Image (tube, rainbow, N blue to C red):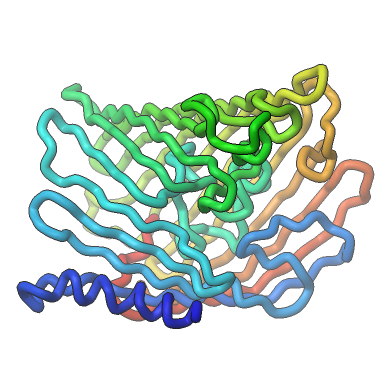
Length: 367
């Protein structure tokens, strides 16, 4: 039965968009991501989601992406993941509201930081950062809800947005930090305080013809799973600095630096636990075919004693290096090496080989 449902997700958009004019048929693409991995420590911590978590071969993802403008007023977008058979995102976006306002509604990834919005094929590594898995989700911090954003009329790009997500158990809410309503006193959604909320401010500065700087701060608030009707708060900041050699007319190489950090305050029985994490990442585009990426991850507990050390482990450190070959915008081959230090363990190693292949209206790989 589920396969008929999947087929329906493909056919329905084609039917809806193709009624008036064949030119209204949506952009459709399929993206295959597969890889192989090796771990020197068989008892290493697993990230879950679409990561390569075991020694051997892994089918990380087979994603269907569908999107198109419905009319001058709305746009439709959908991402369905065949590995695990689940919806990743499906939402509408307004296109013509006054005063630079925009509304999105449906099942969406939370706009918290940089990494949470990225799908598997957008990453520069075979896996998400340790911070992302710990605070956001093994895949995405996401759910069914709504978003309101406004682009303020300032000399630079200044975006303010807010999101609200339904947390009813079984309603597609995904989070490593926030609980569903089964952890409330009544076990159901009783009031607006049982929802999950996200706020973000984003700035972009053009520092010249070749340089760009993006700065963001985010916050999220929701339910704690350890004490009924108690709270969890997450605060984060992110920086993205990019240089691309455009002015010389030789746009074949570039440099990017990303830094992201998060702090989480979780209410547990009789106490609060505060933990934090972050990563720094540098990407070098050597030519239009070759890219090198370096990343350092760090997570730790600042104060308090976690109820569940599996979800809130003590110090985690990882260094990663990846080399990516991009024959075209529709394929890439990646080799990655990780050096890992978990609390109470000796240093371990991991190595990965990954391939990505896309067909259809797939956007160019971004740098």
